[in-house]
Image (cartoon, rainbow over all chains, first blue to last red; front, side, top):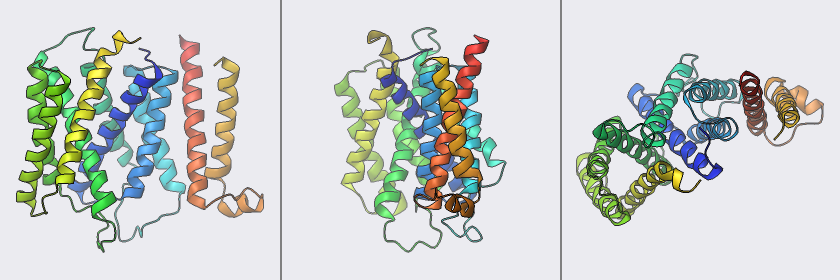
Length: 250
Length: 65
């Protein structure tokens, strides 16, 4: 399958952000460091591999498998030869060889979902609820990844954090994912997909999830985070809707 | 792009990777190629490696098609 470079760009962004989200949640679950610099390098390498293969060769199952293996292997090579910026006797990182498998699996899951439940929706209509749930899952994990990035950028700057990881916990990320997943699934399943509905749902999901998470976690309520989350929900939902409707523009 | 350009990018990418990723830092500096910091050089080499990998896959894919 060949897309124009703009659609390939959005597809690659969706896949890379989703992969990083699953990866960061795995790190939180296994108590390994989640550090902005490492996430940034990982994002860059995985994005370049996915985008260049999608743009120059195409998008499909074989391309997905090659990207899923190639990206993490190249990332591991970078890790091996770069000078550590963290004391690795203190901070556990994903430098073990078997982490290649974890990264490859995370990348392939997201690539496969985006391929089959976003790009191929028109060609082979599947169970409508499964499609809506898959698309919502992609939106949710992308919002989680972006929020983790925002936390790392703005909330941990200047903090003396002995573990050098963001102060989000796994349950925080999972709760956030669910708070985004549920309304978006209902929205996409109901087929009411006008831009106004998407914006309205995004705002509701953004502010309600921020309120609930602030109550649950004890973090102060942040209208900026609520609004940024609403914008992210709308943006990622629109990217998926645009990828589905790519045929109109080619 | 035609086949020749992919081969050129493959070779350039591999050269970047060999020089900036796999050679010891002291040797790179002795050769007069010690630009930026070590990790920046490794990242440049890694991008070369990505270019080589993608071009290699493209060439293989075209041959099989």
